[in-house]
Amino acid sequence: MEAALLPVPRRRVGLALSADDAPRWVESMVGLVRRSDLAEVVIAARVPAPPARRGGRMFRLYERADRRLTAGEGPDALERVALDRVLDGLARGGLADLAAAGLDVVLWAGSGHPPAALRGIASEGVWWIRDGDAPYFWDLLEGADEIVTELVASWPRSDPDSTRVLYRASSGRYPASLQRTRNPIYWKAAHYPKRALEGAGTSAATTTVARPLPGTRDVVRFATRLARGRLARASGPTRWHLAVNAPGAKPSLLDGGSGTLTIEPPPGRDFADPFLFERAGRRYVFFEDQRPGRPHADISYVELLPDGGHTDPTVVLELDHHLSYPFVFESDGEAYMLPEMSAAGRVELYRAERFPDRWVPHAVLIPGVEALDATIVRHRGLFWMFATVVVPGGPSSEELSVFYAHSLTGPWLPHPRNPVVTDASRARPAGRILHRDGALIRPGQDCSHDYGAGIVLSRIDVLTPTEYRETPIRHVAPRRDQGELRTHCYDAVGGYEVIDRFARTD
Image (cartoon, rainbow, N blue to C red; front, top):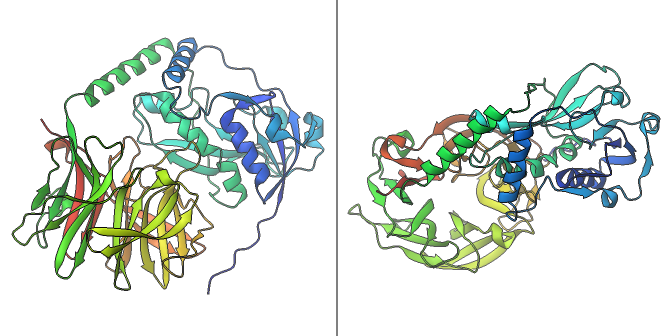
């Protein structure tokens, strides 16, 4: 029997603004809170922001140049827009009106740190996204392993001197651009107040330390680091390929083994996202196949031969949009494939009409969603789907959502704790969920400092319709001593293993 969720009380929320306009991600944040069933936004008040810190002229010049260079790559979270649309119908006032409104929460939608004048006027304090005066610059300059963003609550009425973290998430970084790093972070952070209102996150002590504004020397160091990074990325041709281990081969591919078979693509082609499948005593590898002249990837397969070789690759699924991550599995004697097709805006299941080379649409499992790398496992009488669901404008590799159903074709229900993981170092699925020593082991992609920085194996400790917990237990890194730069998908079936590797070809 599924446990019933306790009702979450509806909170009275006030908005504190420092201007009639704000960055576009703040507009999104306010709109999400206003549409929440768990909050009643009752008033918007103008409150002067604290004076901006002096200095940082060179940093501001770099910010503007970086935003110009990346213009057109997607919605700009920092573009300033009028807030009239999201404030329509709200009572307006000032600080005194805010203090008299009997609020549970004040949501700071202004610039920088909230003003001390808001101290103690709401029972749960002032909620705000703490990002600092030079957001994420220092993380990139110093090569931080992860970028942490926090939703904090400051100055609750019962303890106006306290500050605590309500929601904390780690994000990846794009070493070549500050704007490309922080833009998806802000779009994701727009969802944190709504999630905290819904009971996600946890109360924790604060950890963020205030940093100074970058000086000219810091910006020069930063520009030098970016230039070196671009040169390193441009040094020679690269290719994704696959490595396979036969049963009993040592060392394991997870331990750095080379594999008993390498599946190399022809020149100009890339093979990645491999999955194994066994049928009638024969073994196959399905994978993403990026071919020359094709604007997007398709799905192909090879058969592993008894002599240790493999057949030529055969394309089995090609559509008018990108396909990857061909998760193949068996259910009730039928062979199914769940390819990643987020570009189509749905999670769609395919069935083998003639295995292994003819696949037909079987059912749309989740419509109207940008979900990446959906992976299904059956556990304790339910079907469970793990996928990265992308919020508009947000990152594609940082949040894991779970869905469950009583039958393969659904209906599929979202887990109430979604996203159950918000961590760039392990959230995005990286292969079939494995059964090891009575436990479920979930491979996840490490995208904390680069796409394909490694694979993290996490033990699923709790998986129920109301709770989810996992513990990272192992990190598998690319074999850089052998010229490999990335790896991001692993599978094991019937003693065979397969992994993808991105390496230089010269």
